Amino acid sequence: MFVDRAIIHVKAGDGGRGCVSFRREKYVPRGGPDGGDGGKGGDIIIKATSSLHTLLDLSSKRDYIAENGAHGKGKKRHGKSGKPLVIKVPTGTQIYDLESGVLLKDLKRDGESVVVAKGGHGGKGNARFATPTNRAPDYAEEGEQGEERVLRLELKLIADVGIVGLPNAGKSTLLAKVSSARPKIASYPFTTVYPYLGVVDAGDYRRFVMADIPGLIEGAHKGAGLGDHFLRHIERTRVILHLVDIKPYTNQKPIEAYRAVRRELRLYSPALARKPEIIAANKMDIAGADEAFEEFRKAVGKEVYPISAVTGEGIPRLINAILRKLDELERR
Image 1 (cartoon, helix red, strand yellow):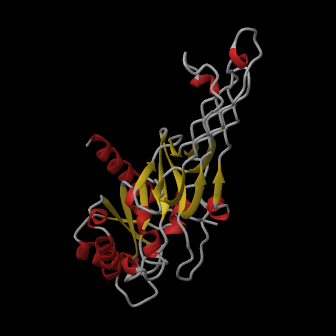
Image 2 (cartoon, one colour):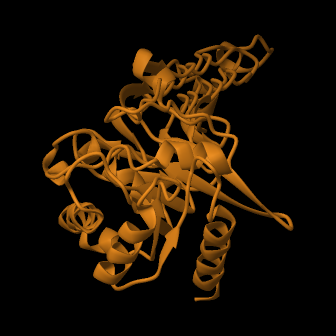
Image 3 (spheres, one colour):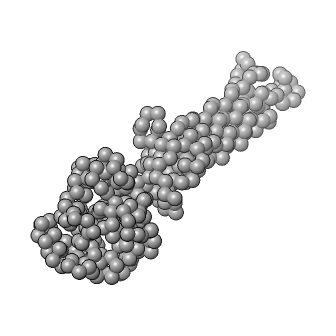
């Protein structure tokens, strides 16, 4: 199950109390203070890992509490510090403070981490308060409380290429054809109800990550269909692969389908609409596709790559076009 949003409560460990203790020693008033400090409370750390692809685990467990620091002991022994609690999330997770709405960290790289709640410092033992005029203090500090907050986590997939298009354009079929991803595929709208990631091996040690974004419909930027929930996953992609059904079952022309998706991208985010785009006309294996392709190519006024996600026709040329575009972006 794909979950890309979660709200969790985190509580760092409290610091341990300082100790009030006196050693027994001749000629030293009351034996002399020897109470040690309390240990520091454990931090709450959130760490990104590429081995996870969903926030499902965090949606089922809401409370995360780190270990408290141990209390100080006699003979100036310090209490043991509490163990930090590390919460692992998928790479691409954004961490917000729920109350203020402030973005605390955007974990874009594998292994990147952030302390979201600091453990409290341990209290000082009475040995710390001894002075020439107060040689036998009988008090110590309490440990500080650990930080506590509620966080909102949002996952934005990190992919080089994001496939967009209306439902049934063949996005899942294409991803399954060019990668090891196995998205659910059927002939009815909204087969894909959450994004899929696949690694495309282009040969010569070249690879890139491709994401299948669930189908957009008119009004997606306002929440219609599934698009509003997943449009933000395209924001991180470097290139948009716009897949158009060249012979749709409906009366909608391919150019109308293309413009409808472009409109939703623009209304959701002008910056998203400005991303580099590669256009592919899918289902070229269907009778009458050649005539429809020529009509669409002239109407769109841009280069269009004819492909069949089922037979593999035109896909090598499309992959090479994607590689060239990615290389071009690297040189900028």
